[in-house]
Amino acid sequence: MEIIDAIILGIIQGLTEFLPVSSSGHLELGKAILGDNSIPEESLMFTVVLHFATALSTLVIFRKEVFEIIGGLFQFKWNEQSQFSLKIILSMIPAVFVGLFFEEQLESLFGGNILLVGCMLLVTAVLLFFADKAKNTNKNVSYTNAVIIGISQAIAMLPGISRSGATISTSVLLGNDKSKAARFSFLMVVPLIFGAIAKDILGGELSFDSQQMLPLSLGFIAAFLSGLFACKWMIALVKNSKLTYFAIYCVIVGLLAIAFAIFG
Image 1: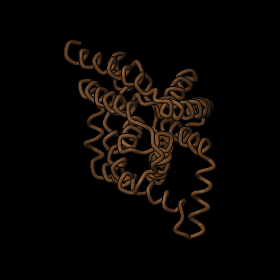
Image 2: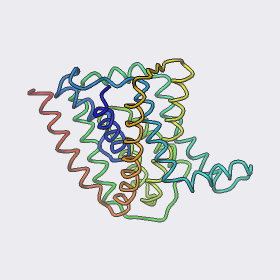
Image 3: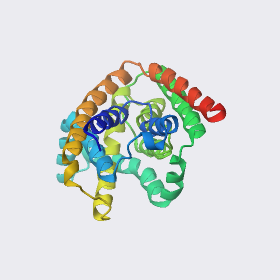
Image 4: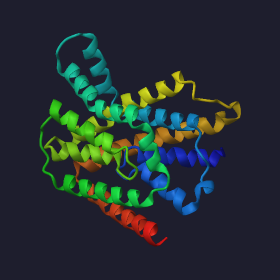
């Protein structure tokens, strides 16, 4: 993989991991427009490195909360930190279930199905629009909310539905505080990313080429830094009700994708 490609892919991963525009959907669109051979195929190792970088950027942004949660767990008390951890675990269950039992069916949807991507981008736009209009509250995410948000995260595994957009919108529409909704959305995916990385490592599916050390390192740095920026920016956007801009963007791209699938 070329160095410039690694940096570009790292920036894209860092931005789209947090911004509600669906990184998987955009990758499918890019492949369809440019051709599968026009975009360098990401090795599993590179994909893992980029996801690790964005997970690490999340931990840096929310380091205070993470340390509080870990500290609360080791106190073995039924406190706010342990309750929040339980909510995170509950939110993970739907995505883990889909990933374990429907992996092949899910992968089959990532074969250039542009019509599906376009329709799902429109779904993302609708969620973002209504979430942006919701009134802000001081409500915390409840246990029931955590499960429902987790179901949204599982559905967002479809190409074209933004994971952050779906989970934040669902949380806000359930009446939760917007800043807390964004915080919960970003923290709930971290264990899943580390779990997926552990699965790939233990499964022996990763192969490392020493010649790729520089591209891997630069891709990691690009994803980490752009992830820091996008994470902080997204929290501010949600708090200040600026998601409509992304809704409009998703509508435009979604309609173009549908037109491309039908007439292209």
